[in-house]
Image (cartoon, rainbow, N blue to C red; front, side, top):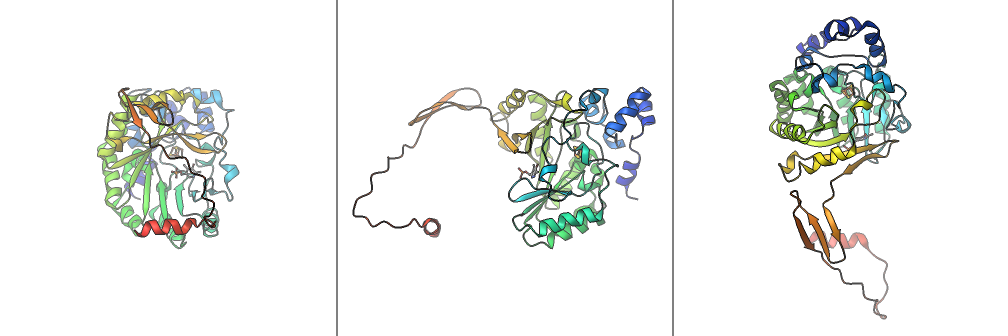
Length: 374
Ligand SMILES: *Cc1c(COP(=O)(O)O)cnc(C)c1O
Ligand code: SF4
């Protein structure tokens, strides 16, 4: 067994462990574990500094989860966009491919609780159906391996899937959506990186939510992936009590850049079963964005998005920088709220066509080609 698998074996999972380690009452521990199973591996556990801290809140169940057990368990309407159980096809040219139900930690805020955990095992048949779907849909040029966490699979299993995807000529890029570099960085081994390298272009999107997660171990894992040729991005979920504060977010984004991870998205927390206590007002997210842009490297600034309830996809929100505008001028404010005006290009109104000109059908393609050749 590899070291990371041993670590995973040592996770806190049972009712008895919840009671012993965190002092839950027996009834509460039972109910919580039944609602959404606990898994806290010893590495992530070691990051907790005190009860209720930003690491604790993400990993340790809380009775408050049981208050909104009636909330939707598929807030993004993913199931309706699943032509086969392992695929979510929402956008024109890319799909989510759910290749495992396992994670190396179960995040209390997870929006995919219905698909995640020991009770929903994924079989080879289920994966083959996904590969067949992708092969039959030439418009799919980008495949995001997700789950669960694809890096909880063995190298052998993961390679089988990557190889399967690379046999499909229209699949241009593959992404790994994985929390592993943050929650179990020991899983990123030289052997894994050597295997991944063979199937480029592979992008990795990971999931750090707090600067305390940026440990030397995590840094090493991210650097190994970057050295293996994978551009690494980060998707943060905005959560009350965890990172709903501009200073914390800025520190996280800067630390990520120093680990060669490029911030990609900040997600507004989804409306989801057992996790609504993490939600923050949208204005908090906008204020955070306002305190990033201009104040630190542009590279540190992700898109802030709301994944529209009901399945509309990710919608970006940005603070308003336009004070006013008319036909001639845009009045803008900068990051310090100083006001500037920008004279716009005023296009001449199209003249009425001369009568004698012969009328031809527009030849759009030709026009572009001519421009390109110059
Ligand atoms: C987030 C997401 C994607 C990927 O979106 P990008 O903006 O390309 O990163 C694809 N499919 C689904 C269903 C998603 O939720
Ligand atoms: S790693 Fe992702 S899928 Fe797994 S529990 Fe956390 S949020 Fe959910």
